[in-house]
Length: 295
Image 1 (tube, helix red, strand yellow):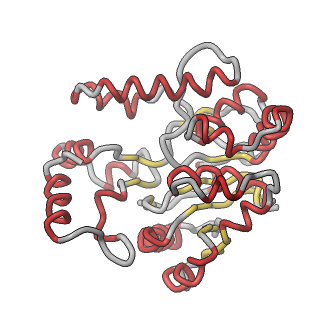
Image 2 (cartoon, rainbow, N blue to C red):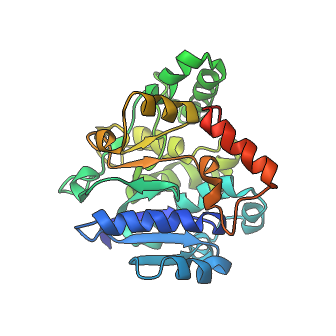
């Protein structure tokens, strides 16, 4: 079993983005950390073409799903992709490929050389992203987006109460966490099995896999909690990116604090496979909204 790998769950529409991510990993991955990508079995040939020569190990989503025979496969496949992918990502540990993994999104890019030491200790304990979500909440102050605060507190409360934890509302993302299989195993053995449930049941109640992982870590303490700020800079809204650009904050500046950046897929619809959806008028409207920072 490997000590640490990169893992990304993707779909055909994001194959160009996954290829871009793989190229940045190949460029900066001097320690040769293995990179695994899982996709629906039907999309394996497509990804094999786009990821050829980039050192990526492809896995069929069905292989991950089948590792847990308790999952209701029909119920899972009936879910929209943005929900079902959370279950698939959270079951990756069952394959026994690695002790820990950095769970990436297709729209990530690495922006500088990185090392395993940024993500786990020499003993193999991962650094866990945990804070009070101010990276998300603070920018919302200037835009008077009260719904962002309400959603954050509601989502946190939903999962926190499941573990009977009182106290602060924590954020365990917003993206690209390092996950340890011991935490997932503790959630499975201590929480799910006694209730005759699977992770699919949890996601149907509250669709945020990072919160379930984080609260399970706090409750069962399967590993030592080593707090970390996010490894990637995530732009939640186009106006955040526009503001940084206006302030002269670019890739070279971000590289002092982050190893990568996440841009929302909706801002790069020209990278959709096989092409950007909608007629030319809708495409132009989306691009105009992005330029104005309204996306």
